Length: 424
Image 1 (cartoon, rainbow, N blue to C red):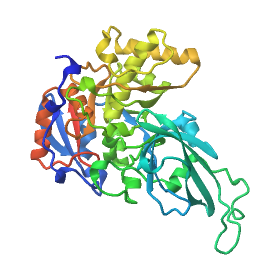
Image 2 (image 1 turned 120 degrees about the vertical axis):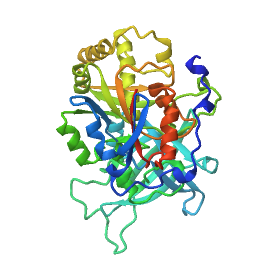
Image 3 (image 1 turned 135 degrees about the vertical axis):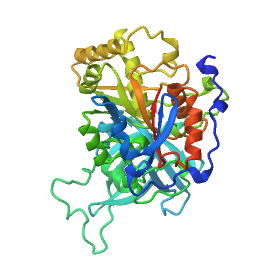
Image 4 (image 1 turned 30 degrees about the vertical axis):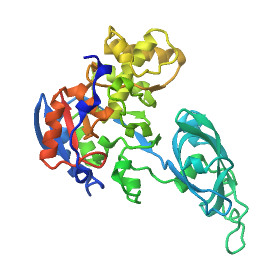
């Protein structure tokens, strides 16, 4: 059967709500680890993971960091009108994440807007404080962008004073002027961390720590790369002690990761675009490891496998290395992984760049040929999801055995749940 004709109902399983982990365990690495090795299924504790990996291998982690992407406003000057939620998806102007986060005074983002019908026109605004300085943030609709809205945000010092009648800016250090706070500082002060909708609860203060990996660095995701949530400094030290090398890539996880497949066959499903950044050093390290890697999480899988197709595009002289959704099923895979990665290094050399910035819409489903990833560490995914398709593409029909075993052995599911090590 052609990949596009796969019926999503064939990737279903019963998931009672009580099996969805609403909170993480007190110790990240005390979670269960299911091991599927060549079809044989067993389980252990996550902190035993390093002993199950080959010495000298290369592990790739996604170092993205979840941002405070939920912004809440009240309609009307009196701030007593309808509640409007503005959910940050990706930067519009400037388009580069890091440049956008460093903006002072204004920037724009593509956003989902909750209660949009109540916001027909005009500005939304709310006041907030950073370092005892009072600011006002305004949001303005610029236009529609696909299923999202382009929103322009502006922030400046509010004319309000402190209760004592003192100018709230007088206590600021000299280098901190009225408009000197960055967008990153603004959303840290005013935003709410977005946790997955299936947790059916409000974000708690503890989520700010537990819903980030211990190695998260680069801000930009609206959802955590959850396979990484199990890692502790102790586990990472054990990995290093076994001579296993570690590299990091950045893929900013979009809200589309939670979007269900609504079409009967996956050919009717449009994958969301995700932005990636990979250092030259990482590509060189991959080449030194025979172009093979252990991927921590499906986001690392998508990044590594997209690198192959970006290399194909680079070898064809393409300037834009964006990977379209169905490219893997329309290309004959005549390049080896090593040839593709070598083409990427040439691409960077020609542009005198140290970091590859690109984007991907790749869909990995049964029928896909893996080029770089040899083992996957991943959590347990929602029924009828594209992530379950990715697992099915990696271990074949054994995915049924894995999920049946996890259900029978009281594993915890989804973002805050337990983990698995998959070896074809």
